[in-house]
Image (cartoon, rainbow over all chains, first blue to last red; front, top):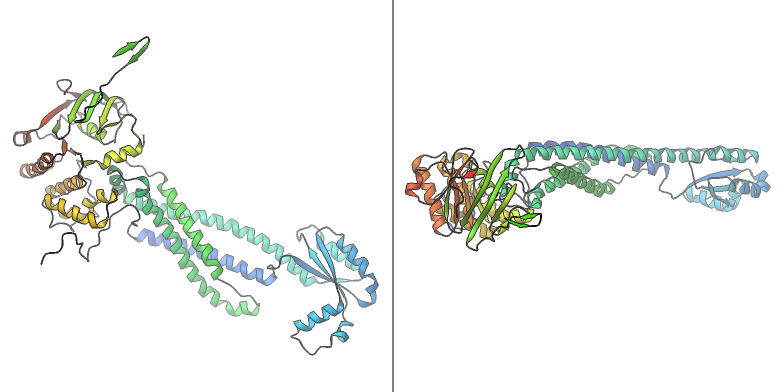
Length: 296
Length: 240
């Protein structure tokens, strides 16, 4: 029995180029996928590290707060200290925390132990909670320390360390953005060079399609799609490879009460990879000139 | 030439409806300064079979390239399928190419693709769906006698078979005109005659065929109108 005339044999799938048909996957694409994946993995690790560090210093809080403690015997000076601290540049507000409130908070922090709040509150110093508006203000911490010392009060130095760490993290975050930009450009160039090689290998096909009257989008679309696919494929692979890292350091992060969320990186990596891939493809196809081109 | 005061205007006649290609005082100069065509005036009627002859470098291939928008006239008038090729837009050139079948001197077959894929490519460019595309490509390959080589790669075919694939690709969209640049150039006489038989059959079905060739002896068995070029000009002046 003869086959129907319009039946394409199962074992041979016609691969017609152009439009939404991707070029075949070869060694060049595989190498580009690996390189872009490694770059994205490195970026993902940096941002994951920043995520952990931010949790550690508590930078999820909207503002940085410091506490100043005044001994009970100097409690009469609390109002004046409050006013002096509030007048410093870089401090947005100062709130006096009553000793009862501090004792209740501490009871909760200790796991609701059988602590006598009224008895305990009598032993606590007077507390002021400073909300900082600008942690980068020059001499801010020195000024706070000086004012506190004048009244015989003490500043919570651990919180100052945290505020400094917060500042440092801010600088590191800027560096991370810069690194992201540089690596994104490098990845776009890698994708662009890979597609350029594929384009060179397929120059005859591109030329022929143009001679047959193909529209430019039809000629270029496979390469744009390939770029986007390379970028997003590498991003997914990089994201999957972040998990062994997260699981490997989980003992250490648990000890620091850090809860890493790689899921938060999936969409940024995927979108970033796809955009970078498209960008590389657009660059690669920007000067796709054929003989007998329709350009004047 | 009309003169109105200081203004001199060259008036070209409007192309006839039965005229597929018309040119007046056509000139082509390459950026290098070489003049490929000069003062060529002729008209090609729909449905005709044209032999473009002349020595190497006479301008045959340049003229064929102008017919599908691969080259633009430097001066003069050229009208192809009602398009004025001097100011034709990119979109119009694409449309013109979709209505033109081209057989190249070097075949321009894609060796990484099967015979079927090579022939189906123009249909894909024109947006044919698979259910229409497959039977059409098969039918055309049947016409050129290659229906048993659908899934072969061109490198496995002989020179004559490759040329027949090129003909199938050129005719698959049923174009108004087929431009063939030396289609029998590298073929033995018998194969060349078979190729020419195919082109003649297409012509008898209404397709205009314009063929650049050196093989003048083919004319005895396959008659057609001869346009002879010599150093970029028509031999014997304008041909109507």
